Figure 1 (cartoon, helix red, strand yellow):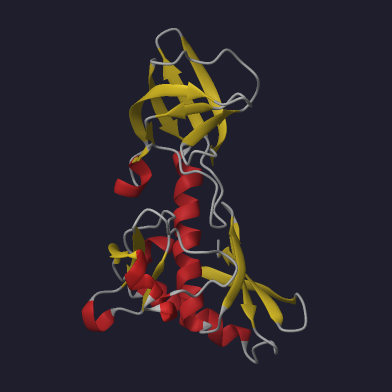
Figure 2 (cartoon, rainbow, N blue to C red; figure 1 turned 180 degrees about the vertical axis):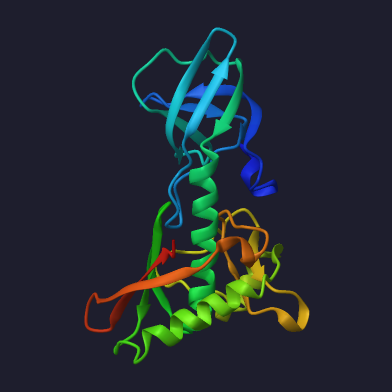
Length: 239
């Protein structure tokens, strides 16, 4: 199985890997993946790979049917052969913006403590859909609460529990539309804050910043009605 370098260190932006196979669609499967693969509302990373005698722009990364990670070239080209050592280079600015937005969405789920029915992340904005029959009365208050949590510069950390332990604590799962990353025997939890200052803990397989202060100020945009009981809350970088 592919070693998930982004899981070990979300700030790593260059690393070697070995090509272990090609997909029928022209993807490059590597043994050590620096690129996050599309999933959980977070886009796959983009960047470039290089090797002796060649280089390729990478448009995104996806999971294969065998749960490996395949790098998808930006355009058809000669692929590095199986067994080739490649160097992976992230589009770091794009990845880092994903990390900041993703962590901000976890904080949004704190200031809007309702079940989450969907969500997505981009380099410019993010959104969560909530089981929210009525729109909030004061968007400005929500925005102020969100930025207050960001400014507290809380530590973002991970821990692990077993699948059975998660099943016994269903309240940890906030997202109704996306199943937690289960099946390997253990589940990664992302927490914000430590001990008495911990404000959030939920299953997540995505990439995050190390402290909430890295997010920067966030603006809450449109709150849209998306069904009888659903509201979509959009967030943007504020400047």
